[in-house]
Amino acid sequence: MAKVTPLEIHNRQFSKKWRGIDPVEVEAFLALASEEIEDLTRGRAELESRVRALEAETSEHRERERTLRDTLLSAQRASDDIRGAARKEAELIVQQAEDSSERLTHHALQRSAEIEKAIEDLKIQRTHFRLQVEKLVELVQHVVEMDRAEDAKDRPLSYMTRKGEKSETSG
Image (cartoon, rainbow, N blue to C red; front, side, top):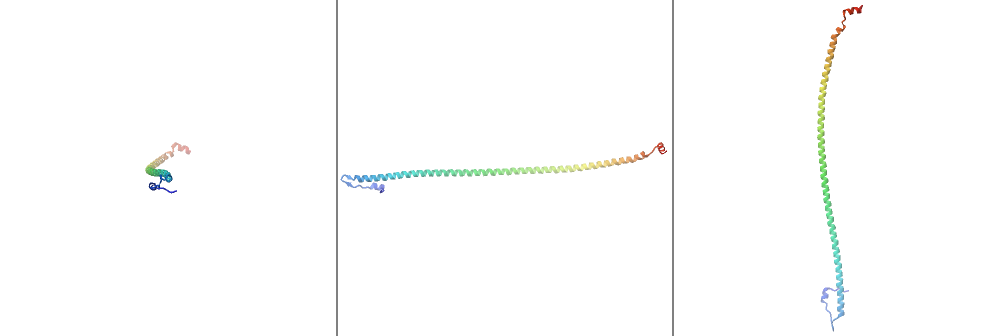
């Protein structure tokens, strides 16, 4: 089947017959032109339909791409937020640990100083107690010596005999 161009349709000359243009030739050309225009119209409709389908598909792909890009950006932001929050939490934990460490160290040093003072106080008390015990021992020794001295003074009296008793016991 020969393809007819719009220029051919425009320039087509029909031969003249006794009654004018050959009706069979005109009908054949018109049928050919009609078929060609119909094929072109159908082809154009199919192409337009395909273009619309491809445009819709492209639009869907662009929408998916935009959705994926938005999702990736959201995921990136969420990741950054989580990392930032984790960093802040880690810094807070470290700060709390440092504060706790300082408090514990300060408390330990304070307690150590209290214990050292208590030890010094106990040493002073021990020294005072030892001095008091030594004074008490000296006092007891002094009392014992005084008691011995008294005993020594009292002995001659206790060994003395009475006049009447001496002769009675001897005789």
